Image (cartoon, rainbow, N blue to C red; front, side, top):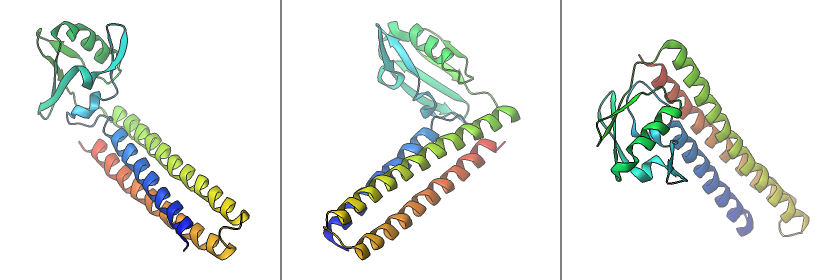
Length: 188
């Protein structure tokens, strides 16, 4: 393949890998039966009028399998953090002792597990769409190269086949990760 198509394929590989990594990060925010500090990654706190991520305001730890602790850097923000966790619809009920917020992670009901599996599938589909968008953009760039005469038709076809193979690999990788996450959610 030519240098131009090699660059496009390498760029597509990087962007697709980042899409998979972002999806894996989003999977971390789905609650399973165990306490996971990433559960609170999406929680935003109204800190002196600015929406701030919880992880910038506090240390989140999982000292036990069913317990999360949130230790704010600024003790005066503890009530705002507690309120934000309550409003985040995570199914967690925070309690604080003035220094630390404790979150007991309850057992998941069967219905809640099924809802979480649906959420995981939605996140996975968003990841697949991201991968397909990268493929579409690179296919468009390859057609532009062919139309401008920078690469021949055969070269374009080879690059498109390579790109499709790469897309299929990344989507299969994402499906495997989704299957593992579903098993983790449904594990009793």
